[in-house]
Image 1 (tube, rainbow, N blue to C red):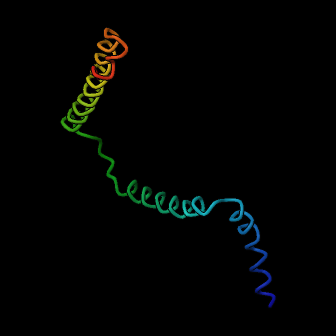
Image 2 (image 1 turned 90 degrees about the horizontal axis):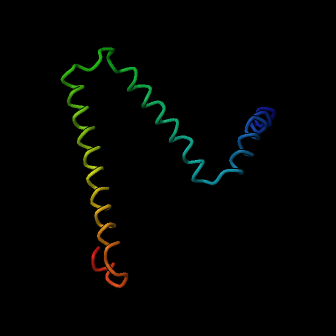
Image 3 (image 1 turned 45 degrees about the vertical axis):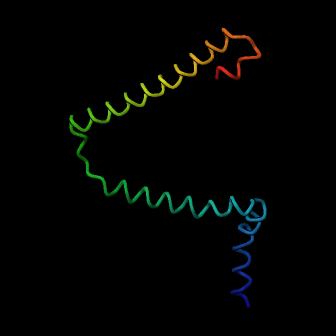
Length: 96
């Protein structure tokens, strides 16, 4: 019986915490622990060698292509707004 009383006294703070959070947040706690453990394992498994110049060049090329694509998307939206600004209000929806 004394063992049962000591167990409940240990769990009391956790019960108070569990009551203050929603079930969705309580489900995130073990998920966060699993993610941290997986990332730690991945970090330990990495070798210490840095990227080769060819790998670095490929990564930089991919980043530049993404930046250029984003600029083109915003340019297209800008031209749409410019053209809409030149037409009458009643025809603005037809332009877009």
